Amino acid sequence: SSRHLAGECGVGGPFEGPQPRTMPILDVLRCDMAADTDEEYAEQESRFPISDLPDLPSRGAAFWTEPIMGVVVVGVLCAILIAVTLGVSIGPEVTQLGQISLTLIWVEAAIAALSTCYLLFGNAGVISRTEDTCYPIPREVEELLRQSLPLDGLKNIPGPQDSREQGSYCVRCLIWRPRNAGKVHHCNVCQRCVTGFDHHCGVFGRCIVRGNMPCFLANIGMMFAGMVTAMMAVMSSSAVTAEPETGGY
Image (tube, rainbow, N blue to C red; front, side, top):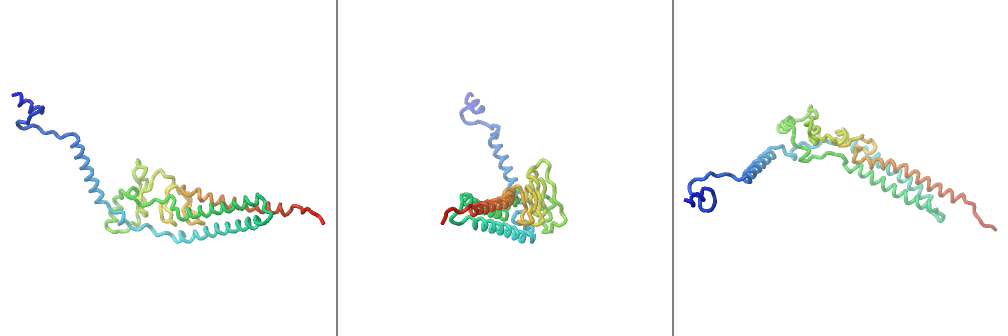
């Protein structure tokens, strides 16, 4: 009958007899996504937790002692240059150049102090432990970690050639170091991996990297700028003193 036909074709009316059941494409995609999610969840559950990783290497002794020299050098230079400029720029006959020098020397000292603080406490370029930098843990490293064995004797492990984030694996910091981030180096004094490495400064006790290089250069620049400013103030004061006194009896 026509009603029976309509039922078989799915056009109105109830189905009569067994019909082939097809799964909509949307349901297939949902099942695939659910399977992928389950696999990712299982993988995350089986990973070695970041919180269970060994502590980062202890800082070298110079990490704590070298900054003392940097603070003393910056502080003493600032004190001397401010004292010289202040001494010749205060008085009833202060020139406009002397007033400008006095303002400049305070600005230069503030820049030097802020630059020093960032060098000491900014942690510029340091690669921290995160989900992205710690995983995947190389197999040989994870096996030793799960057995609570030391990693002594292991060398840094190269990463995949086509990966920018996984250039090499540091077996001391237990992190992946990026490939395209300038020179990446593990400092034996700071005991951390840094990106954009230039050198370790023995005066400030920190690695000078791309991230804090402007502060390092600013400190050097402010030293010379402060000397020039103090000289300007002295010359201005000397010019006022050398002017002949006018008047008579």
